[in-house]
Image 1 (spheres, rainbow, N blue to C red):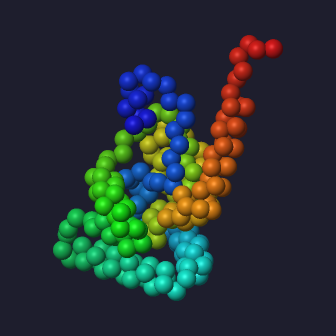
Image 2: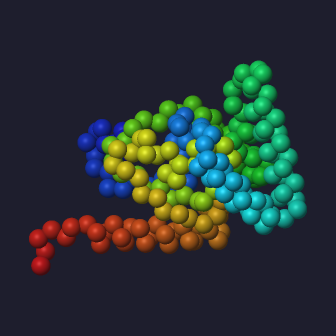
Amino acid sequence: MARQLDEQGEKISLLVLINCAPTNCSYAHFCFNPASLFKFLKNLGYWAGCFRRMNPKQRREVLVWKFKALKKRFGRFFKPSKIDVEEIVDLAAQPEDRRKLWEAHVRVLIAHQTQPYAGEVTLFRTRGHPMVCSFDDELGWREFAGGGVIVKMIPGAHESAMDEPHVRTLAEIIKQHLTEIQTAEPQGDKP
């Protein structure tokens, strides 16, 4: 949307993205080398900590979902097919009234082709990465943000960043960032 507004001559003062990566980009690809192996192990440790903090029911649900998603992903090696929504998000963990919304969201996301944006992007992101990716700290936005990427770390995991208590902290971090931007702007010729 920011790119389209910019093309129409609108001034974009701030583009904020919350814990998302561009679709169909290099971030989704793992490149085997010592640095990426180290990042993989570090990320694995992060997810192990998240898993330890879950209750037994949540652990069981996550393991069942991961097993099903890996089975589908592995099956695509032998019989190419479209990506299933359940490979990307655990719909079982979502309330019934949100499942159709999530499903529609993920289907649009899979089909979307991210285009370059001339301006700067501010990315608020959690520490965790997907299990297999490039582990880029900018989540792949450097490829698309001509004005660069500012990264601000936020608490929680991808699925919980917008839930209590993390969303309060996120609001404070955004508020602090807006204050930083306002104080950094030139004040013109005011005395």
